[in-house]
Image 1: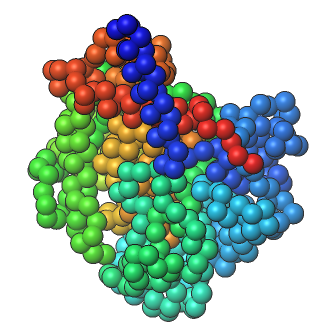
Image 2: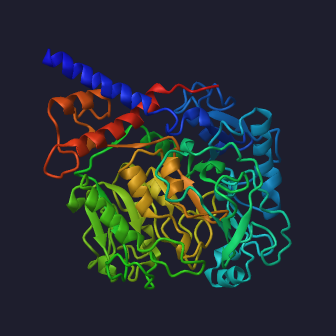
Image 3: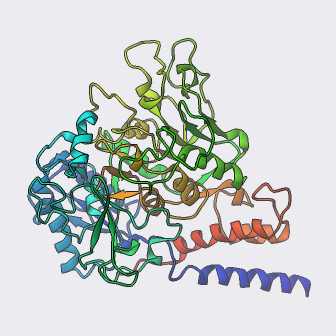
Length: 538
């Protein structure tokens, strides 16, 4: 009788877990639209590998697809061909935005699709309307910003506001269009799946008010007004890109079925010239509120991320590698590169988060070859599957489409990270200023510790839209942790709940196996069940 009651209890918990995956379910494959151009060989190859040859014909053939449930859109026949790297401001709408709008409308998908995926070979930077390369020159950005006339952005960040005509009125003047400056991301800091937020009004023109220099635009109107921009109105936009198609394939493969070992993988939080204290007010540190724009941005991201990870207690404390010091011998490096004597001892454990000041670190190490210096640091580490890159560098996502790095700002590159075995990245394609760089804190809470998909977690960490940020990696991927893998089989399934009920485990390292541990396991299980049980809708 006792055994029967326990079985019924566990079965009830399973039903509860499945039921909870309804309205608030995480991103599904059928909500993802992969955009490619069959005239561009790399774009075709990446789309075919990701979605499968049945949906993307004309390539290698016979590929099942890593995510065969996604939707696809071929720009061939819908728009003039684009080229990798930059796209002119005036060409963004006719060659990318408008064809995607038309495809969604024609196929009745404007409310069904919640995520767009761009493929290698398509442009990733929109040039400024009247000063095309200003975003590549930090010394000139301030003047453009103070003049309220900064229109350059990443392609992905512009497409996040797909239905908003931000370019209307743009003539090179101050605040003459909403593409001047940036727009506060309504999904920033969210902890819920994107489907939690209604997108019924996503095609309605929104109202914005300038609330800071740049200008910084915020949505206006009552909370229930259709003209108020909400989290549900944006598209999560990711990119599958790297220096080679093989790099992209590897990145996609490493994003599948990730279960990270929380006791043996390292989080690197390499700050520089910091007091190491979580301050409320800005104090001149790069990750603090220094603000050119406004006081709305978060402060002390590196310290807050450290504190979040330590407080959660699932990661071994020794694996949370935070450093606030500035000399070159305090610059975290990895063992795959030979560094000059006196450099910090290499981090040899596999890395799951590389959050680094990079070129902004005071004191740069040199390689023994002395050909290149600290900018090659992303190539030096061993990475666990699912590793995330987010450096505090202005141009860390510039080098896609063959753009290379800037001679005066040879910063660490997401492309290097991916080539070296990384899986996910967020970063900047033009000078963003320190205020708007993606926040490690929300990546940690929602991806490393939470159960959101990569697209959801990444965009929850990006403060601004129509700005410089980009998200790289499989949007549908999510991270499981060994702390919740009670059976040790490399998966999070109902078997782990059975095992926990039989022999409760201390998941969060609090010293007791209790309801808090079960709650963590249930959240992870619900996310896993949503992925497994919800079939694509067509």
